[in-house]
Length: 269
Image (tube, rainbow, N blue to C red; front, side, top):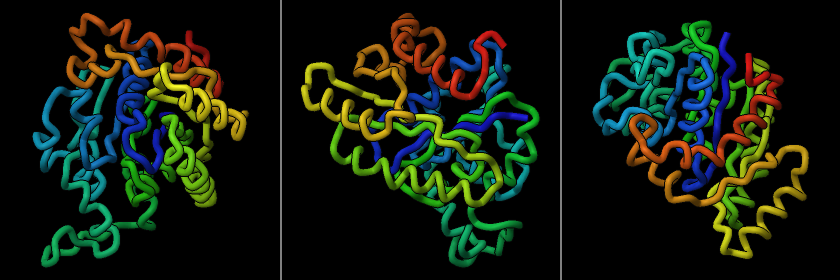
């Protein structure tokens, strides 16, 4: 049965999609079979892992997988051990479907079992035994997509980019994790806060990173991800045939070890 990990914060530009893609890549590199799920209608994780426009997945995305509860029909195989349920703009209709059971105003009803907040959990029941890990990227909002991802998760990684707006977002996102715990479908533990996109030239970046560590000493990861050109170019070069891949991923290696350690997993397993 897969361990399900979501990454999120209700703010854009904090490195969610890049970190989700890197985590999935490192897990596969070490021998795990991984399903990545893109729950953001921007489709950034989908494009990062496939090097295809997200619109290529219209009609064959995570949205259809959730509605039909036939996820195997919509999985894109990045490689043998990395599979993807991709996203595109049509995922923005997710909330309409949850509350009206229709996609368009005049469309036929598409009913579902369970509550609006457990549809990803129900969908994953069909396939989670096929994987070691499921990694879910969420949108930059406390939306129905985010709530569904949190309710379905075992662990949640919170992203923090050193700024006042990110700092203000952290308590609300943690409250959303604790609300997901109350549904008692999965254990849904906040496994840690990753400080990302740090500009070492800025003194305020150091200040915000220290403040968040002081406020959440048991949650922050020791690893801090700095802004780095090779990491930024992952969205262009991807993970395959990338001549600078080792440099791009080097600062994530310690974070990856911390994640495994907090889940009680030996890197050699």
